[in-house]
Image (cartoon, rainbow, N blue to C red):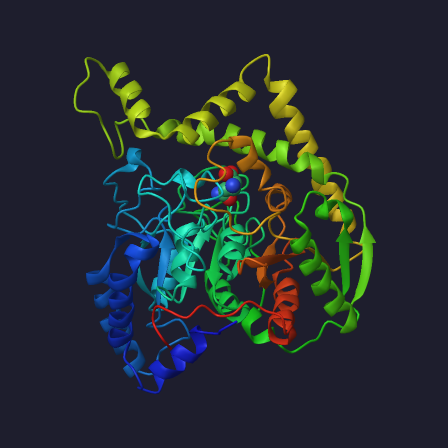
Length: 486
Ligand code: GLN
């Protein structure tokens, strides 16, 4: 896949193009193509041009770092001061936060240029981005298909050349699965590796900000900048990753132990299974050692995830009452009716379903049977993963049981939709990192994604394994032609 950030940075530093010109190119591409993909839901072009001008000054002073002057996008649930941030929900209509998420302040400090906010499932709940109040984004690989979700707009923008890279959030797969559907790279870091301050909460013990990009190197360059402890997020961790970007390409995969769990392939479509096993063989041919591992706990991961995520969502979404943020109905007789109408009119069906499920599993009489049991099982699953990582360095698995399905395909059945998260949710439950990289196209020309999973804080290992694959595996997914031609 195409590395974009470092080559662009070289052009900027060599004076071949200014950040202002580059930003203008992306603005023109978005103006021309966004109606095809519905990737951006709001744009911040004037601010972007101001940031670009500022970046040009930094470059002229010789103080540029690799992200200086490079445009990018944020998912519509990551706050930036004064800019619309609506979680693609009517209930946050018109909401403009008055502070920056830590990830965005870190990027801004390097002179990054934000083009706008991108489409997503309402409050990040979904796997196709179709629950967005702005309508679904469309997959640039085939616009009759979904982008995946919930960070579908970021994936579409990055795939279609409407942003060099973007940040999304991953609670149960929302960075990796849309990356897989759109044939790009999606990194979900270790829980705590990147600050969540300024990310609008869905399931706080699972939420993690991640990177969507066109290559593993681009992902590493962004991760190197956004990771680190943050006093505003008490779950963030002080871990010294060093520079992962610098480490890429310096090692091969000889002697690397790759865990393969049969359970990860149960119920996975045959074409995907074959593609992932071919990739595993490629690693083996290059000197990696394949270790058969057992992960019987995998089948518990999906119910555990949907209980915990809904429980946390029902608590996190309690703050939307029409008083403090966004949408408020025009007429009401008293405060109670105002809150009721705000929520009835402001939340979509999927959000209401999850608030009800979450409230139910937390209610007295059911708490022990559902929520508490799910938390105990979560500990078991985490312990099993810990043990597995004493036998192997990484686990290879599919990112999703299917490639991008047609629009409206899963709409009729929420449970069917939930089942499509089977391969991604264990990673959030256990808090480990994983990266999705494109492997090849299926017979319909839609990309298949492979997940490389590691133990906590092993971003360097999984990204090196992914980089080796991206550089040396010959059966990859084609780069998408379109957007800003570089
Ligand atoms: N599809 C999963 C869900 O609906 C994951 C979403 C996410 O990671 N934000 O909960």
